[in-house]
Length: 378
Image (cartoon, rainbow, N blue to C red; front, side, top):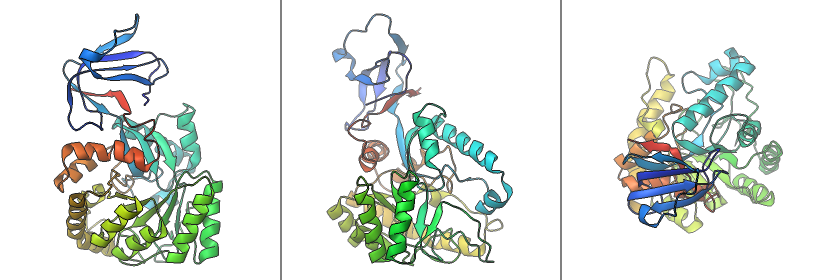
């Protein structure tokens, strides 16, 4: 359990939400040592005596919240302009600086740990770890694996290839294994695959299956052989959701078409659903997006609400993720409001962005109560 701090710190007179307990603690104290590790978080009546010289903050009866997780971001992608503009009109140096700015804004929004699922090189993760850039702790997939004409194929309808080096195409088992190895060589913590088409891709549909069952199994096998790396699947429609879960992925990203069979498989396999509802509440201007994208978005909005609400009622493992890069950067915690709107309790929504997300990312042994003083609110 860590916080980012340069000196020992004590926060008192706060209402504490730790993301684990069923209720908030009315009168609490939090202490962290000079290395930033939380040494106590609990009732004021049981708190140890304040060490001499420790910096003390009076919370004035405010609420201290954990540092939150966002399990699905694209910090290397803009949310305020098209990927065509990004690929063809943006200087590479400017891209780096803009990604760094998005990382800072994400941290400022209360996200202290994030999983970037494509378009961010591993060097950004390492820069945060080394203290060279402000940003959330990162796990990165580096890129995305898809088939030709699939969701991660960066070729435009007119035939122009945008040249995104983070998009790898694999059209058989051998290529799927090779693409996985290339991602691992580039420093991936998690492998991102596409098992369905997508709303934002021009040549396929969420109901289309992308990678085939045997290709999914090959990716999962390669990832497991390399220090047991997890696999995350972009899976929007039912067929690709089921294929991903049968193939052994750790998480279903989006899951808009999930049904009872998919929920059952999630439970059987101990997998997670990351619904990215922030993308569905985002309004598209029909004058600014292609007709095919606008039509798909309208077609899937109500289906998504119904299916994710049913999954919430089934109490499957749900971890919070926004798809920032498609959704707006720096507004990550709107995802919690979206989950609550579809039937999740407010405390369960906090858990989805804390303890459940930590389990998904495999860091629950040390970041389960990753509480930051910067989470203090009046």
